[in-house]
Length: 403
Image (spheres, rainbow, N blue to C red):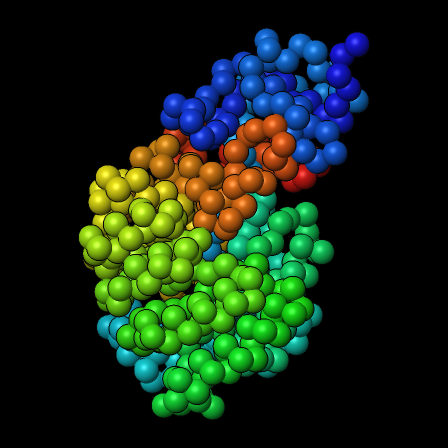
């Protein structure tokens, strides 16, 4: 008797992105079978003739990839920073705006003023835009509350997005994002609050899947970040880091020393940082939207990362100040054109390596038996179209958790 599944997609070309497969793991005449929201088979149709299903979808030669993953966003916030965009066009730098009370603190004021329901309502259009391009998992950071009350509020709003939409949300506590005005001139005092109150409260409420920090001259020192990481790991929460975006603070090496999931941005990453990341298995999450939007001219050391075997993920970095980007497909093109990533690197960066950067590779990111059935089905002739075209969305269907 044929094995009965819930659903089968057949007549498809697959890009499985499975580890160990050559390139994208292409299967020309492929089939994906799903039961109870999990993939039970993904591979050549000729090797899966024992499957039958209650629901069979004919794909007519379309391509199926894993559902896309955006592994770095700040998608929960209120207000916008269009006025600061105008300032930058007139010549002001990001650092100058931040030091004058703008930047993150501008968004902090708007976010503190919004209640949880308002934050969810403001964030859903951004989530919808990503979902419309085949995104099935989104990492969402806090970091615009900068107090116990408002950081937890932002994390609750992020979790609520998964109640409002068929999407997987991975939450990251980024309380160490900027110094709030009530702690002006007292960075160590604020880090005390983060370590002694905010991290424990987020852990007790099970609101944070990871803890992040901004290690930079306009944010927090390596010594302060070390304290944040120690507090996070003491509560069983993995860490990641905004590192080497504006200068080389040696944050990537610090993150590697704590076994971080990822180090993100990395424009000023040095050879020692690359080696430390490689040895610790830290993912390099690249954010070409921020590079483009802030008109940076120093690229991350792509060739050094490749040579060292550091996994590379790509993300939108969706945020109101430096990357108001809600198109992961455009981030693919930016990664290729600005950072010279290959098609394979780009697509792996928003599937397999994005899952790795979130500590979710055992659940999503590839088309393999046992993983959640998150799929993106595309009207394309070759996967390169997903990276090559700008402003064009060829998504035919999005499948989340087998639905």
